Length: 278
Ligand code: NAD
Image (cartoon, rainbow, N blue to C red; front, top):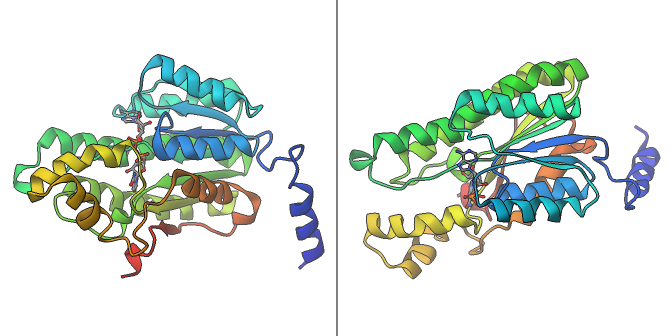
């Protein structure tokens, strides 16, 4: 093995002129906020052209596009609503048409709802399966032919610690995230001979609008106040007693997208302060 060449390569790429993802195109679903935006920043900083996607106010999205473009990369915003399978596929087809390639696909968009199963609204169950699981199937299905033809692809699914273990009152989310890990392993096997990897990142609690939004519902479901929910429910499972950061998730996504991750395939990598080690 040529270790000298490897370390020379890393040294050479440690400059602004040699960004490791230059020339590549990355789609990040649900990247108008939270973890997706953190991943988009990391990939843009490494030189990848970015296709942003997600909901939000037009003025805020414009500001995000402008902020990322300052990293000297092309940035497009695609408003596809991924609750609809055909929109998810269209997001990928549009990116191939615009850029001629899609090297990195990050399936990150997700929603949550917290309620005991006997009261769980059926429309929430359906929406969580559609966005958190089926949308990833549709984007991957649309991206695979182009990636196979190129002989290269990096698919990164943002699952969750709840893809590995369960918590009460999150039946739809836990089921969908366990499904994402099954999808990840299957795609890993199907693309392995064509230079395509598919891996899942399994964050524990990361402080984002998704977590903020579930505090009230969790408080109601468990009869606790806000502080007790944060300390006794959310961080109770996380031995580090701190929230993971979007920058930490972005750094892992960047590594998985890069050349040194070529042999990591079908993995589910926890970023959870030790939660799922228990
Ligand atoms: P967030 O609410 O900040 O971001 C969710 C993103 O998905 C936003 O950009 C939103 O606009 C987008 N989105 C929502 N509905 C959509 C739709 N119909 N079509 C397209 N985009 C849509 O949440 P987050 O915490 O950053 O979560 C991102 C991912 O990380 C989710 O899959 C979530 O399950 C996962 N996750 C989060 C945590 C956490 O603690 N925050 C932990 C584990 C896993």
